[in-house]
Image 1 (cartoon, rainbow, N blue to C red):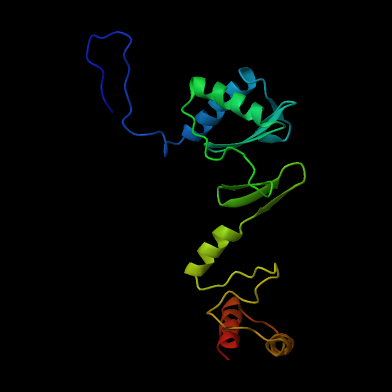
Image 2 (cartoon, rainbow, N blue to C red):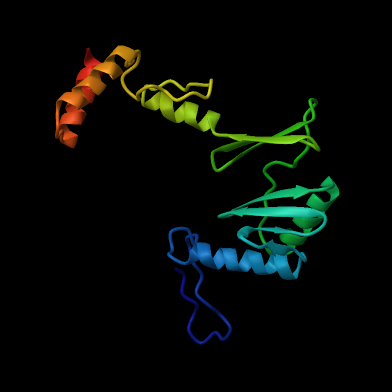
Length: 190
């Protein structure tokens, strides 16, 4: 923090670091940007969705310090950006322009979004999951079905193993959580 020189009226402290990590910085930022969007940009909060604001021309979704803007026309996008730049440092990461196939793709907080203008929107986490699961040596099952067990590569529990577990449950009246853990480890090894 840089202190103002003594005797200088109208001067204040200047932070050398950003506000990230301060307890109320997120709440203060949200309050500031929401007030600006409502008063200066004439957007209304959608009841039940406190981070979504809209008017007839545009929908704005707030994600911490990111903003997703969905206009009915791209010109509204640029008008909003101009208004925001009057008060805030603003960086446009994706312009919303469609590629040759008519698709706009975004990555917002690890969520992959594919938007086909006027048709549909797909959301998923395949890219981020693929990267994270590789570090755990667990393959991503792109078919959408659940993996059998998150375990070492090429280890699967068969139907026979499951039937054996059901039989074991019938023969034992009380089984502790630790015993079930040991049993599941044994089933994975054999």
